Amino acid sequence: EAGVAQSPRYKIIEKRQSVAFWCNPISGHATLYWYQQILGQGPKLLIQFQNNGVVDDSQLPKDRFSAERLKGVDSTLKIQPAKLEDSAVYLCASSLGQLDTDTQYFGPGTRLTVL
Amino acid sequence: GEDVEQSLFLSVREGDSSVINCTYTDSSSTYLYWYKQEPGAGLQLLTYIFSNMDMKQDQRLTVLLNKKDKHLSLRIADTQTGDSAIYFCAESPLSGGYNKLIFGAGTRLAVHP
Image (cartoon, rainbow over all chains, first blue to last red):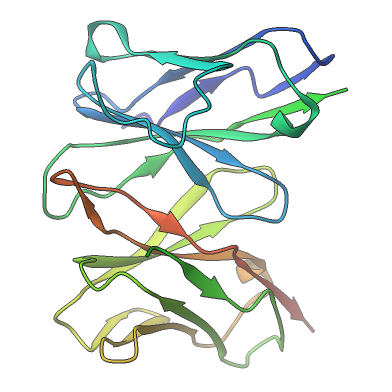
């Protein structure tokens, strides 16, 4: 079974530029998550989708970050404009969407460096 | 509130047991999780425990849960160099009917010969 796919794996941009990340979840997984992992910290949830609807985006900096999940499958996360403090690994995860044992499976992440 | 705390670093000798500790705050968490992260990789689910259990064993891994003290531990028996990684504890409080994961900062396990 294929896992969660993410691209690109690495991205280097200058501050004030824009960047987009792509995620393809495990087939059949209704729930998709984007996390930000700053160096030396645990992942922090940015946004959670159930199919193509947003369940939780309370930690998403909406002035610069946006995300969408068209057709309830793939998702993109965009940062515009980027700041130095956005340097982090952006992890995508997916789960079946059940309310009991809803195990999350993670992709390899995209490492973003903002100069 | 939601907060997960872990010690940041653990060093063990190959063949010894490793014990990684974690404290959490949200008593509504139905499940508690342990994830492993190797350099440059995403998070790999190691194991999880249901909140009404005290212990769960899975091959070399033993999870102990003290729900009264909100304390979780992961024991790795016969630790190998391949176990060197960062281990994350996570609680899963209910939020709007959905589970979300709150991670600790991770414990870096170094295994030396």
